[in-house]
Image 1 (cartoon, rainbow, N blue to C red):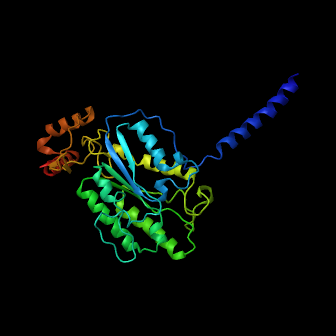
Image 2 (image 1 turned 135 degrees about the vertical axis):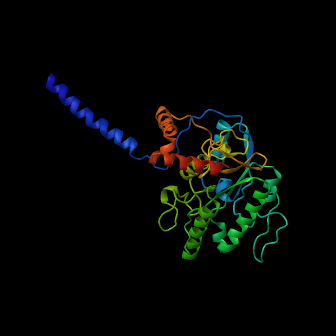
Image 3 (image 1 turned 90 degrees about the vertical axis):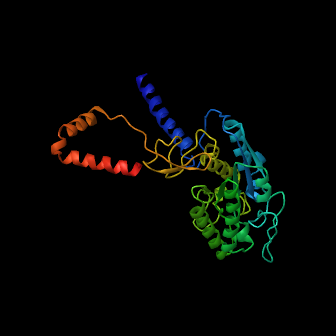
Length: 325
């Protein structure tokens, strides 16, 4: 009887290990992470999406699986007071979304009223997301033209105090090496010029040659599939756009900046107040621990014959006072 029990145990344990490995081994490193954040209705704002086929929902088999509807559902659950308007249209380029009245160069499309940056700004948004994956490259527009169009949009959003988020180009199975090179150059320029508000829509999906990885290709070599759109939505969620709205109490600090309240800022750093005024910010006072209090008392007692540590402390204190003056 005992030998039978041991035999059953030896047969059962390896099978469990194999099942566990197979069930967890195919997890993608880019798989979206489930979120259980509590809804925060205090954050209010409007996000407008400008773009082409990817934002318009072309690629996924199910319309609700596209990244914009996914992100819309996330906002409804996490930030119910934040709304999203999608103005994206398949086939659009950076020229189509230029401001109304802009005169494009010869053989370039004119801005489309109602679907361009003018229409987006007319909605008084808090933030605008621009997602134009590869149509400029397909039309053989120069990189200089594309970047000039982005700069024009950025200048308009900046002048109206609207946050601009710009996605990189996306991989595409171009047969022309020059188009692929242009695609990657545009990707690099977007990441360089518009960080930290640049959305990397390239890295998770691109093969080394600039093509779409087979597992993310919808089948036409141009558009991304359902699995890829889930990752796109996750990238936008991780950007924490609502948390960075001007009136948000939980604004996420951008690289090099502090958390709300200025507690993590450097002494004497110049900040901008709510109305745009420049105000000097001083470091908050921190009550020293017992060890520091003892050293401070010792320095005071030895005022006439300061030792090395005391002299260094005096210099640091003088430097701090000059910085905060």
